[in-house]
Structure formats: C-alpha cells, structure tokens
Length: 555
Image (tube, rainbow, N blue to C red; front, top):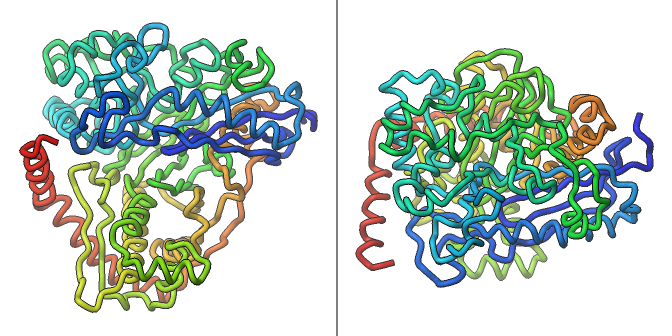
C-alpha cells in the first residue's frame, strides 16, 4: 500500500481546455483542480496569424495552448490542493484523439517553425473532418485488396485518424509533408514536452494509427493509395511503443519549472481521454462499457474475446488494460449538438425566461422537455450534425429532424435531439451485442452526466441501468491512476483502479413503459438511419453543393 502522503497529478486535454487534478495515491481523493481555457480554442474559420480563410470541415489548434495548461493549470491545482509539491511522485496526461501535430525531428511543431501562414502546419484536432475524401479512398482500396487490418476497424477507416489526415497533408501541401519529420499524436507530443522523450503510446497507435499485430499497413498498399506515399509509416510514424501505465521518462528541468513539480518524477506514457477514463470508473472487466459524454461521446470497453464489430473505431490488444481486448466506438456530436441548438434555434423569449428563473438555457429547456410524455413532440432526429463515427463511419452525413409542424416548440426539438443521441448509442450497443461482444454494464462519465433527463432517456432507450463515475474529472483521475502505476505505487492499472477509481452504481434505472414507447421511436430512427446513412447519397450531395457554393464566394 502506498504511503498516504504520496500524490500524483493527472492532466486532461479536452477540446476547449485542459484541466489538472491532484490526487492522493492511497485512495484516489481529489484534493485540488484547475482548468485553463485554450486562448485559441478551435480554429475553424481563419488562421490566427494572417486571417486566411479555412475551407469547410477544418478544425485546428495551436500547440502553445497545450504548454500553457502545464504552466497555469498544474501549479494552480497543486496550490489549491495544499499539497507540498515535493510529495508528488508522478504526472500523466490524456488527450483528445486523433489529434495530430506535424513536427520537426526535435518535436518543434511546424506552426512554430516558420510556417504559421500554412493551414497544414497547425495541429489537426480530432474533429477535423476535411479528410473524408482521403478516408473513403483508404477504405475502398483496403476492401479491394482484402487488407487484413480493415476488419479490426469495423470495415471502415475514419477521416479523423492518422492515415487519412496524413494523406490529406501529402496531397494538399507536399512541401510541408516533406518537411514533417514526425507525424505525432498530441497525446505523445505533450509527453515529449514533459519528459524530453518521444514514446508512441499503444492506445493511439492501435486505434488511430492502424497498428495491428505489430504491423502498419504495408508500403505496397500505401504506394497504391498515392504514388510517393509508400514510406509514410516508416519515415514519419513508426516509433517505439510504450504500454499504458508504463513510464515514458522523467520530468525535465524545463517542465519542472513550468509545472512547479520536482524534476525527475515519473512521466507516464500518454493516453486517450476516453480510454483512460475506464479505470477511473473501475470499468476494467469484460462487458463494462463506459460512455465519456461531452462535446462528443466515446464508448470504450474491455472484452475477453476478439470479434469484428461493424463500424467500431477499433479493437486493440491491451488498448485499455493489459491482457484484454479494448474496443472503441463513438458519436462525433453530442454536447456539440445541444450547444449548437441553444445558440442558433431558440427565441430570445426563452433566454429571458431562463434568466428570470435563474436557469441556464439548457436547464430551462430540460425542465420544459421533462414534462413531456415519450413521443409527445411527434419528432425523430438523426444525431449526425458532426457526421457519424459509429457505426456508419461517415463524416459527410448531417443532422435531420423529422415531424416538425407549426406547433413544434424549441423544447420539443431539444428533447428530440437528446433522444437522438441515445438512439445512436443504442445502435452501438446492439451492434456490439450482435457481434458477440456483450454489453452488461453501462457507465457514464463527462459533463453531460449532470443532466438527469438525458441520463434517464439513455437508461430507458438502452434498457440498461446507468452507473455514473463519481468524479467530475474522470479523464484527469484516470490519468492520475496511470501516473501512480508509472511511479511504481501500484503494480498495474486494474489494481490502482480498484483503490483509486470511483463509481456510483445504477443511479438511473430503465422504466419499462417508457422503454416500450421508445422502441417505436427507435424503429423510426433506424429507418432514417439506414435510408440516409446507407441507401441514399442525399446528405453527401448536399455537402458537395455547400462546398461548391462556398468556393464560389471566395470564402
């Protein structure tokens, strides 16, 4: 048992901010937290330096924003905890994925190497979806050739992943591609900044880098994909792999000055925000699915069996914990959809009523929607406003609401959008079950767990009791658990998870009457899902028309 006076720091890099938490090693008590908002947030319209307009579906970030989290959030969290920094024995980080940093050989991002006026020099955030055309070709060629790695990703490769984004760089800015020495996951880049050592983590390499059974897609396949691209993995990606919970290195003097932590403490191998959360929720056994619900949702679970699940984001040996197959699926838009609706589609009178009631607009709409019976609004929506990650893996798809009339109110559409995300999760759960990977427990982490209506809808739609992680900083707590293992305080991640993880079991239970009512709506959702997602190219054609129109305006 570790000493009670030992502590670790977990740092969670999200879409809009980074947050640090100081955790006691012995029992997982969270003693101090701090958040730092990225000054540049997500760059979707124009480059920060010269104002160059970006095409649709781009999403970039500035790497200096990530360093600022280490300089501000970590010292602030330690100060808030009251802990003596000398008692901190390790630090670990997690990141959104797949978020890619084009680097020089020493880890300098290209955006800091004299190319700040070039869009491809910046970090490509996970939700950069402008490589969908490349992803389509990656998948199509792999199917034609019968590549053995494709079924491990549900038969489809995402535009969010390393290969598609790398191919886009190769084809759209060859000079920058040639200048890129390392095509680095941000999860590994930040560890490089902390320790001075570049270690490629097993999680992102397997799920996002198409590394299966120790091999990447062949040079022959890559050359057939695009002449001259054959050395992509060998030259820019391939690197020694670090296992989750292992030590990547130790904190450098420079990083110690940034963070206020002791030089030489353990720095854990990087990880992904979703996958690192499973141990924080004590979900390291087979059949326990964790949904990390925020701007998007990532579904992760461990299993004792290897199966091919259509549309999954991947299955990786040891991708979550050593000794188990780690599965991943997800939804590209969840909280983002709710936020978009409140900003774009709600009359001012609702904002005024919310303010008068002392509520946020989300709280106000949730209260109004909670008074409805299932199906009362007469609507069914598709939750594809950011495309579909699982099980269709198509980011050219878009959102849809069916059933609107002149009597439809904002709270009706809001509830329909909540329900649509639950229906999307049910599709994922049922696809796993039908493929021989049973889902027995459903555990929710992330900020959306605070919405009781949303949680009850998920319980009713999936017919699963919902457990809730007992931490507001699930990914950061998960990183702290990995830091404790990397520092030698525990022998492995499952042991540390048992001591440091937190979960409240079966907080929401399904109501059978509501579940039956949702079955009817889910049937309609499936009809729309298959029609627009499989049978017609309507949504793809609309995206193409939009891009053409924007090109015509010069934007």
